[in-house]
Length: 331
Image (cartoon, rainbow, N blue to C red):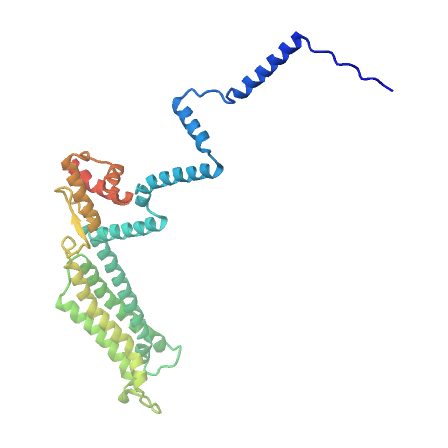
């Protein structure tokens, strides 16, 4: 059987030490866990947060409100609306190219070049058609000139040369009239015209004679379709020789400087020189607004495209067009 050990009674030093520890513990609990803020506003907001009790939902809502305020401020800025989309830029590029090509087509030098090219094309086509038409009639003329000669006999061979030397003589006259017509000097001498009609008449007669009812050989029957087929070449030659001088004379009367060119849209001359620019009604209105802003002092005398875009809130292509249109005035 054990006996309990008597606990020693605390002395005065133990009591003083216990009281000191209790006092230190109480001071620690009453002291603030966070250091005092330096900014009074932060201290006030921290005090309000601690007083209200800022939860996670409150912080999320505060972030949403701040985001909404920033979005509302950005939505009032129309700068993104001034930017052209790729599709708009492609369409503007095609429209500007078409306008410049149209304007280039009104230039007297360009019109003269186009007329000369078309005239050469028509003359070349007419001469090729005339050569083919005369070559087509060679067979009919050979039958007329051979007069039933045996194939590959001297008469039969020389008969093939009748149409070529007449055609060459006819092409000399037609070529001379065509060349002089391109130089604005139509050659309408009656003797040359009679020579042309003489060669054409001989070619037409020699092609048609063997196929007419009184020119057929024994045992042959008249065929109207065969007659038309053989006179087709001379008829085409007559048509070309008749029409070509008329066409060339009309080309020689062209006035490329006053060809009656009509510009689509508005024409704007920035200076007293001969430069004429093709400007759409939208750009013309922007030019007037820019001139008013320059007169009011809101824009410099020679504004850049960026300043014009910012002032008028238009596309950069339109701003460049306005800048280019006003540049000669400033000069």
